[in-house]
Every structure is written in C-alpha cells, then in structure tokens.
Image (cartoon, rainbow, N blue to C red; front, side, top):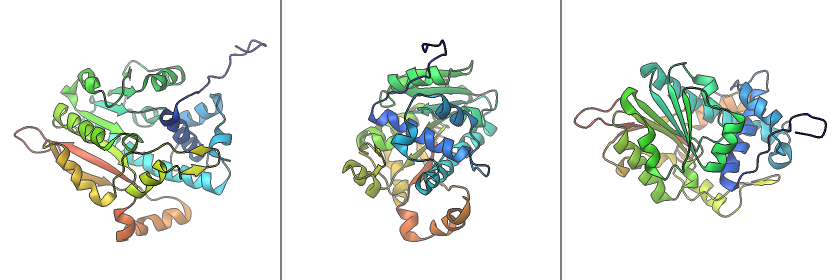
Length: 290
C-alpha cells in the first residue's frame, strides 16, 4: 500500500532463468497492443501495465523495430503452442494440460474450453509470482516444483488424456535432463503427447558465451540446443516416443510474413531454425495416439 492509500503495484524480482518469463510476457504484450495483432492477449497487456518492473529499460522501447519484430516472432511461436493445445482439447475436452516452466504465460485465457484441467509446474519463485498475478481458478493448479523433479508426474490424472507443454524451458536444462524429462513423460502418459520448443545449437552456444544481449538484457546460458534437422533423434530417449512432428508456424505479417514460409523451405534455414516439436506417446501394445 502506498502512502496515499493506493495499493502498490506487484513487484517482480526473479532470478536469471525465471526472468525470461518477463521477457516473453513483454514481447507478447507489445504484439497484442497492435491493431493488426497476430496474438490477441489482453491478460499479457494487463500484466505489463500492472507489474512493478522496468520492462522498457530491460527489454527495449516497444516502438523500436527490433522489439516489434521480436514481438511478432514470439507471437508466431506462441500460436504454434496454442494450436496444439486447442487441437488436444478438441479430442480430449476434459483432458489435462500440464504446463512445465509456465512462468507468466497466459495461454489458459486464450484457449481454455471451460472443461479441461490445467497444471502449472514451475520453480517456487515463479509460482509465487504467478499466484499473485494470475490467481488460479477451480480447474487450475500450481505446483512449486522443478520440471526435472519428476514427482510432479504423480500429480497428474491421465484418465482423460494428457498433453505436456514446455514452452521456453528445455534450452535451460542440461542435455541429460532433457532426455530424462522426455523419457519420464513417455513412461507416465502413454497415449498422451508433449509439445516443446528448441533453439538451434549455434543459438545455444551464443547464449553460453554471453553473446545474446539486447539493450539492458542478456539471455541466460542455454545448455541444450537442437537443430531442427535433428528432431527425429529425440525418439531415442524412450521407446514410448512413437512419433515426432514438426509444428510449422502460421503466416506472419508484412515482409516477415511474406518471406517466412519460403525461407523455411530453404535447406540451410529449415535445418537450423528454432523449432516447435510435438511428440506422441504410444499406448503399450497399440498404435500411437495420432
């Protein structure tokens, strides 16, 4: 509470990797404010306006070309996840969506069908902030637990179908942790699926070298990277990974929107670009879900 009796704006103070949730939130809000937005996201706009955090100082002027471009790229990535979750909910309307490392993602308010259950699994500091800013409803649960601590698996009821999402998470894990997490999901949720994104190896190396800097912000180290051409290799993590599918982003806006579909067809771009990947987990003794 301020001196004049006005409630104080909620403060956001996070460590290096959890702070990436504020970076993605800011760029979603930048894109959402546009009249021709690719990602209507009023909750993201509200949070950026309400949270006590130096967004522009850390992440850049929202009117700059670089921030606007990054906002569009984030929107295209997010729409890949939204489309996969929406498709899952069409087939499993009472299923469970497990969001690993969800941060301040506002996907629930964009695609929820009114019947599904949602479980957020994140570090304690991130869960504490999310609980203050985005209080969970009756069908939402928050679990303060690292995604690499597989005890969260026991909190999921798989009876109505499960889709695990890991948006902006795996690149901050060690390679062995990524492999173990994929294997744990395949083991625990036969017939279910998982959607995650990956940065190319070169991008991850630049982050580890401290060379990904924009304004007052430097991206934290990224121990794990995967070129898009390597996607099928993740099947070796567990025999229950029955299928691996590349999720192609929708068309964008302006020059980027016009060129992106063509650029993705170029071998050098197609194989070494950031990617969103969907995994199907097989039912023992039966075919994959999809």
